[in-house]
Image 1 (cartoon, rainbow, N blue to C red):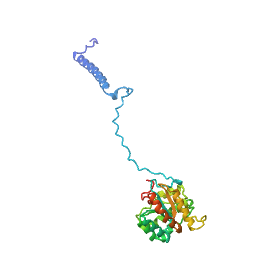
Image 2 (spheres, rainbow, N blue to C red):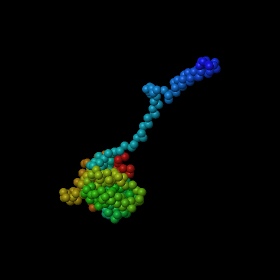
Image 3 (spheres, rainbow, N blue to C red):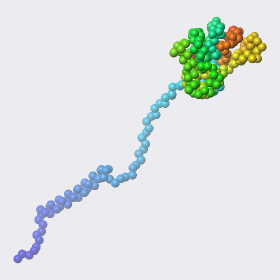
Length: 282
């Protein structure tokens, strides 16, 4: 009978065991190195603030294109009461008149003077021949509403739009569809900011005046001669460089006589010109 004595491990087995031990240690060390090199396997680290990148050189500033100066109205509700230059503008309202307008045109033509005619729409409709003559003589055209309602500014917006557009349509029907109409005058000078804005939306500057000889008012004059003298004196006393002078050709024969006297006096002292075709607001 044999005793139960274990045989010592063979030398080959010992060699294998040592090799496996060495391989395990090497694998653990390699894993530590790999994890140290791979950020994805490292413990999170608080971010480090990096210095701000230098800002690129600022682009050179470009000045905006200067816009043309806009001249504000110097009259009631933003209308224009003066020309803004040394020129004096003679303005004639309420026509065209079949008798007085041709006489006035003849006076102006004789002295090579240009004026501004503020015309009523239904009269333009009835006398397009006179409108054509006014335009052919180089005078400035102005919309004076369709039927000269003194309370025009109180009418509803739809009516205002129709009134001003229809008057312009009648003027253009007489002189040409492409002719600019740059001016509007409210009947009686009864401007409001809303009416001025409506005219502006249709391309028209609103014009008032700073000289009013009240040539339409005859009540206090003893006779025609006294009326003419009063009109002449009023214009001569109040006109200044840049004035817009209000007068009337419709139904006012004495006004024509007054200007027969006034035109040479004015022309010796002032530059007389129609309002510019580009408008007064710039």
